[in-house]
Length: 149
Length: 161
Image (cartoon, rainbow over all chains, first blue to last red; front, side, top):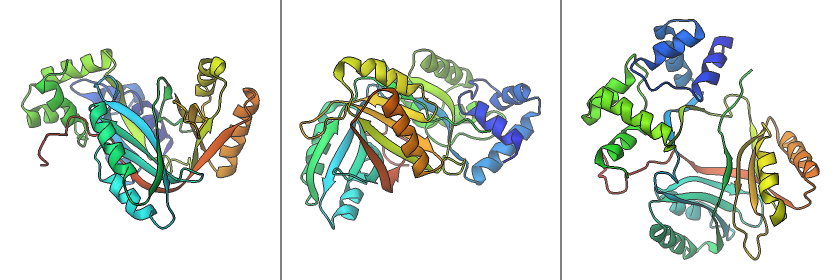
């Protein structure tokens, strides 16, 4: 990455303009041309630096219910349990972790009824020994943002 | 309340964002609204907080933050708000949430800590513990990523294209 790329990504992490020519607006901010910004972004995307561009929605404000679920998976059952959990579209993150609860996933559903139904299905999987649902009341920080120097 | 056009827009905005001179025009044409209508509605979602941010998310391993840990903390209830707010200020912390506890799980604050190595993550957690006089935490280092995707809102009843 060039110093220009880092500058571009630092701005683009939070300030994609909602305007007719967003990349021209960014170019003005960076003292360059629209096509330069577009070409660099295409390149950075090809190289895998960009996971996603666009709006990041506040799930609460869209009416969705979220929870973090910790699961105790029996030895030998990890892969089949993880794959089963992955098959729900509302599961966005699913990580095997160190500790007593060894599989952790996030679940977003349009309502609590569906959440309860999915948790009951997961709890009933043959590899699942225990499951706890950890609901947040307050988000103090949500900021997947990095200061590139 | 979200109407059918809102849901259509939100669904479309979760697809690949076109890297072209007039990306919103392209999206608007795809879903059959005018560019102006799309821009107006997006601006509205941003103003009322339905859009948290407009921008890019980077792959952190590629940009040099190789290690991270989900650290769960047991924080005294009467200091929860104060300590969670303080932890959120740390630049190494990307996410900080409170959560309910369970009989066998006493942790009520969760922070995602990023560093260049496991050791650095451990040092950051130790520092946060000392600064806030916390003695009990669980360092939930990841062993394997089984799934990591972006949420697709309002797609529950839509046939796959």
